[in-house]
Image (cartoon, rainbow, N blue to C red; front, side):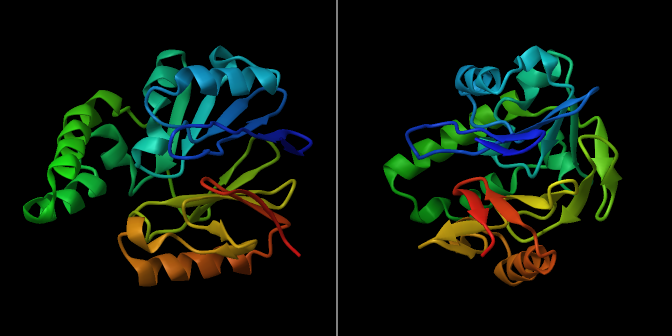
Length: 227
């Protein structure tokens, strides 16, 4: 779905619902925000092609945070020449220098896990190192990226420590990652079940709302138009 003159909201469907990465472009750059799950590089490539580009043309990847459904194809895109950007707090997790906060939290619950959940955890822990990727550029809160009409970095911790949202300056659209969701037609904050620090996440959600964006793109909900 085209959401602005130089922006397309992609839809990647899977067993656990749809994901909504965002593709941006200008005369020199093709930028992807978040990269779907491991194993979804092919449908991601098809969505990018439907927007008029190829994966090989992507010059930069902005990762809102470390979770596997966001970094899944980042390593493949880096291998095609894309530069990887993420918030400086999140970069060590994405690169593998720090253990994923999801794995750390699940390890705390090991004694109470049933067999299926424990098996899922073991697969996740074993597979995580396969998808770490070097971060080419570490970003800071308030930093303005001078491509695709200007993209402002908004540090929105809570869901993870270095989660960031991105304000598309030209269209006044916020790409919220997992810092916002849509429930019952209303814009809501981070999902408590998957959020590390809810008070921090709520403050981040208020930070997004205070920007008064024309629209918000939620990674797990799609496009929310401000009323």
